[in-house]
Length: 116
Length: 111
Image 1 (tube, chains in turn cyan, orange):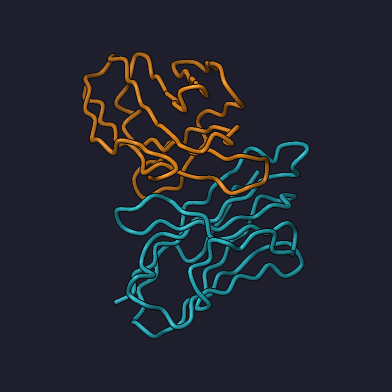
Image 2 (image 1 turned 90 degrees about the vertical axis):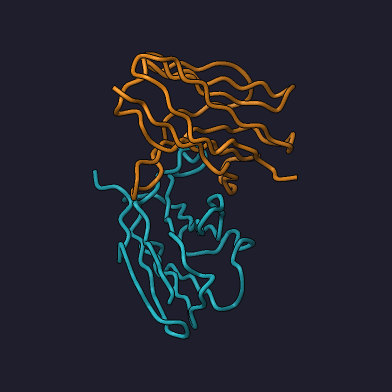
């Protein structure tokens, strides 16, 4: 079974540009999460989808970040316009239905973003 | 005060040593406790998961949760060079809610 896959694995963009990160969760997982780790800090929650609906987006830093999950399958996280402080690694994670295996969250390898 | 505190280390031990990794937390509502292992430039990999208080053992790994002290531990017995990684504690209050992570402890096991 394929794990959580993320694309691109690395991205270097200039300040002011736009970047779109993609996440393909484990097949059948309704819950999809985005997390971020900036240099020297802990991994922090950004938002949580249940199927195509945003369950919790309390961690989104500002309106330059837009996450979508059309059709409840893959998700994209767009940063527009990117700022220097957006540099870090963006992790996507997924889990199954809450009553079954929702407590086990599987992470992708991350998309490493550098804004210069 | 941060919700989850974890000493970042680094922690260096010889092969075969017993390793103790710890986290403290402030939110008494946390019920789900995880330990993740992260190798360099990779994503976190779930190592151990514990619900509420108690111990859980899996091979060379033992996770302990003491909710009265708001303290969790991960013990690694007979440590191996392949255990060299960053170990992250994470916890949450309810199923499906956001995980709160510690900063991670970097462990190096020398042969």
